[in-house]
Amino acid sequence: MLSPQLLPKTPNPLSSIYTPNPFKSLNPKTLKPSKPNFKPKPHNPTTIQSVLQWNRKPQLAGDTPRVVVITSGKGGVGKTTTTANVGLSLARLGFSVVAIDADVGLRNLDLLLGLENRVNYTVVEVLNGDCRLDQALVRDKRWSNFELLCISKPRSKLPIGFGGKALTWLVDALKAREEGSPDFILIDCPAGIDAGFITAIAPANEAVLVTTPDITSLRDADRVTGLLECDGIKDIKMIVNRVRTDMIKGEDMMSVLDVQEMLGLALLGVIPEDSEVIRSTNRGYPLVLNKPPTLAGLAFEQAAWRLVEQDSMQAVVVEEEPKKRGFFSFFGG
Ligand SMILES: Nc1ncnc2c1ncn2[C@@H]1O[C@H](COP(=O)(O)OP(=O)(O)OP(=O)(O)O)[C@@H](O)[C@H]1O
Ligand SMILES: [Mg+2]
Image (cartoon, rainbow, N blue to C red; front, top):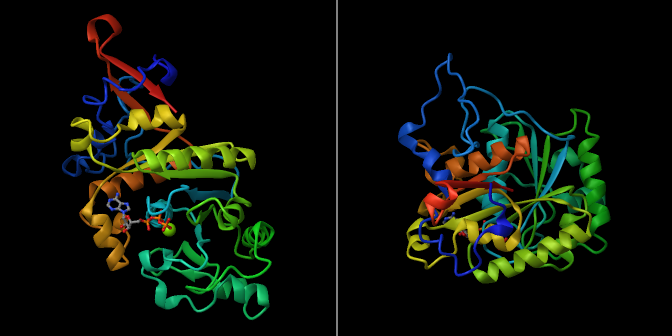
């Protein structure tokens, strides 16, 4: 067993041979539901544990509702894409989900979900007493256990007095709904670390940090990790988005292992760069609903599965000197 601290420092000689092996288990050709008499293989530390398991429902870990903020620091790295795809995956797995678009003024979660024409009321109207909370919740027609809640109308400014306390009140109101508390409340955080960020993280008790494998995104992610910890959010898992294995092999992009070494966070998912993401964004049809599934869609689905079970990805690393140190080493977040 090799701990991340013991791994070679940069330049990482492994980066050319390390591939974020999650995709190994995501070959769409091999993704057939298991036969009913399927027996899970005994634990083998040289293989990845977190594979899609079609013959069971993931076991929800932790107290509900799980209030999860999706954040990043740097803008444009894929927070909203993650919220939409992980959120709908959770709904497809049978959990009730409320996704809150806390990106005031620049909201776009409704667009990604194709729900923009159905947002008649927002939290601002709820707080003003112009409508009830359930009127502001937009129920997805594809998955009725998924609901969207927007803070305000597009291009509007942060309402005066709207801050962490107001968002916490809102989350408490969602918990106290007559029809029952949702299993997951996902908060799509705005970019940056100013007021919007402070507001968005206030009610959360866990965080998903989205980063891309580039140095600017990583520096911001590191800063955000510190801020989340200061706020008492200790459960922080990361999603590495827009990964290109061809560039990693050519040593033009940091490997997932490098990212994990730099941030020291548990890995929830590795999402490949995929033009289907952009296509699905423009269509307002989240990637995870695509048939046949794409690699990025499956990777989001796998991340959702791990979020439910509070599992983090086990990465397989091929050692530099196989004879001396064993062929595989293995670490998890
Ligand atoms: N894995 C991916 N492959 C290709 N394109 C992607 C991927 N993930 C995200 N994108 C694209 O990157 C752009 C930004 O994504 P998104 O809006 O989710 O980022 P964000 O972090 O929410 O941005 P902001 O900070 O502005 O809120 C979108 O055009 C999206 O389609
Ligand atoms: Mg966004």
